[in-house]
Image 1: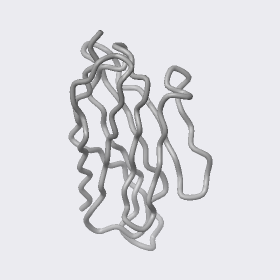
Image 2: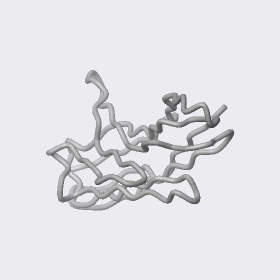
Image 3: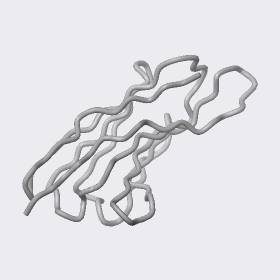
Image 4: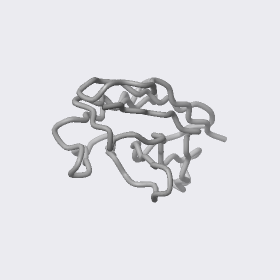
Length: 121
C-alpha cells in the first residue's frame, strides 16, 4: 500500500507565497504521474498541476505563471510553489499520484489527505 502525505499549507495574505510538499511512501515500483488538485467549499475538485517523470508539466489556466510544480524522482516527492496568491486560490489542496507497486505495470490512483490553503485579502 502507498501513502501520500502533504504539508506546507497555511494562511497568507493576497500576493504572498506558500510551498506545498508531498511525499509518497510504501510499496512503490514506479510512479507515472504526480500532481496537485484542489477543492473549495461547495465546488468540484479540480486539477491544479500535474507532471510525469519525463513530460512537460501542465497547469490550469488560472494558475499558470504563478504556480510551479516540481518532482524529485529519487525521493518520490512533488512540490507546488504558489506565488502571487489570490483569495480565489483558497481551497484544500490534495496530492495525487498514479503508482504501480510491481513490474506488472498496473497503476492505481492515490490521494493525500489534503492541506488547507487560505488566502486573505
